[in-house]
Length: 291
Image 1 (cartoon, rainbow, N blue to C red):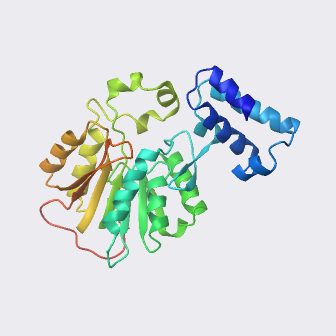
Image 2 (tube, rainbow, N blue to C red):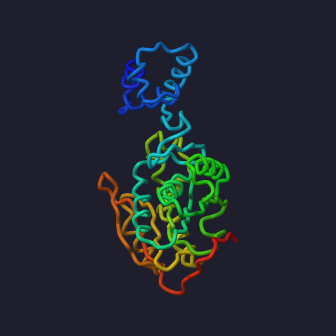
Image 3 (cartoon, rainbow, N blue to C red):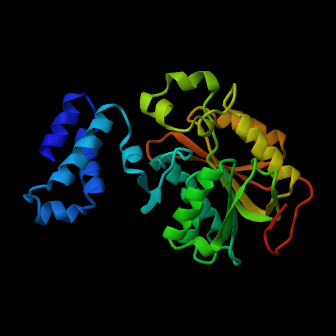
């Protein structure tokens, strides 16, 4: 631990101690308690080689989560892939908003996660709502395979379906919760992002078009056009820290009523939630359907 921390610190990595701990535990398959009760155990040659290889990747700028191929979100373990974002603590705000919206419902909520990626948002919601079911949609079949694995590994596989599609285009039916953490970085901003993000996160999960709002336009239009949000339901989307007003205007133009702006633990604008759009509603309480 001391050696790994020193190596990372000398390279100027700000989270050197934490990164060293995550790598040591993850690469060697240990728990924190192992460091306490067996911390003076000498590593076997293959263990030392594996740890050195992981440290070399970190020193080259690869994020710890990418090296381990897994990360924790909402207290649950999630496998990652090249087509999935690393789950970030800020996105837990979206889960909390969805759970608050589901509180007090008499019927089990039906959930839709648009741009599901690793499936972490949908899986976390269904894990907390044992009677709920849901669908995760993504354009990447590789990401969907990861999401399916994560749903099964976290015990909610029988209540989750995953569909390859372009936002709302392949979905029919009525949902009580619709959530999304869409790509929202303006295209010309991506080259200025931290190197770990721009070189290791999938571009399709970052690129929100010229103004960063393309995905919100598609989502709002698709939900309204398809009558996907049930009466009394909630649409909640993660946003960039400076996008609240712009997304509000898009939602208002599409007929949605804002329910609230929610901030993350750092106090930054993070999630906007909305009620049903004006106009006809799909009141079906039956099974979810796929077009």
